[in-house]
Length: 428
Ligand SMILES: *Cc1c(COP(=O)(O)O)cnc(C)c1O
Image (cartoon, rainbow, N blue to C red; front, side):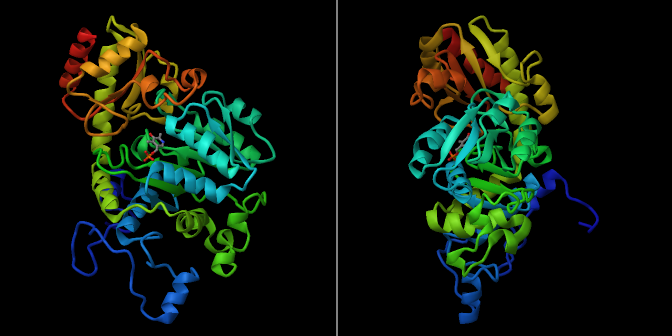
């Protein structure tokens, strides 16, 4: 590639971060299945531990297979650096560990993946990290939830499971005014459909388990540092701006500039909390990412066809897919995600809770399970599964009422996907 050419997204998905293996020439990135790495000498070891030189020490903190994955994700999202970890939830825990202090608050969209609602309201509470909720489709509600203790705002680009498209630029304006970073969970869109950094995100989190890995075979997560946030301005982020006692007084934001957040997440939060990604999972996810653009386009095209078919079906009350003209979020989808509105959406059955349970019991090609972003088409009835821990009110607000069914449309022939839904609806 000539130096003046900027590689395109398809090229980055295959090549970013990867080089033939220096030891063997292996072209595919090897699985470096090792826990630790031999130091060149005592001085080299000391420099590594002092963060004076970058390098491998121990796979809880960093690993060469993981490093390729990180470089690739950073390139696809357009950030300065990335950190790969054990799961999407681990990515969120690490981001907040680096940002929060006991007693601090953050504002999150109410319309989130059910697991994130649990993490924020139950587990984070034990650290005295407190969430206040706002409505994704109302930027003013984020402003209303701010307080002097607010450390961040958190939204999903496409919200799971409601099929909501967030006006990231509008929420970013509120975050900028408040002087706090905007964290965007880009799991459902992936950087193929949408790059939150272009709309004002400061930090991106991803569940790699879903469309990035894409094959339903490995759990992983990532954090992307967009390099956009001024950590010193407010003095509210001591992890970044005060000397770190465990690194001989290194101040992350001073030493590492526009990738300081990624370093703090790795060298402090991942080191001490420990949810490292296995090299094998990093390898599988890297392999998945090579075909992300092809897969994501097919996911979206199939989903659009299924959503359109469902919206004309007599047993279906409503279909909530932002790709359909007439949907409340259609204009935002065209603006933020012009290649497609993703492959996860919900619809409502006229027969309510009972009909939902029957439908998931009668599908044959679809798998009834709690995941999204697989090559296979997936179905779930959130009220009886992923969202059953929430109160009735929280369920409704999260778009998971009793009649709601969620689909994650796979890569099978779309005629087969529709035929399966058709026979299952007849049986229901
Ligand atoms: C699945 C998911 C997560 C959590 O990711 P895990 O890899 O399962 O921990 C977070 N956010 C969204 C939008 C998800 O779909």
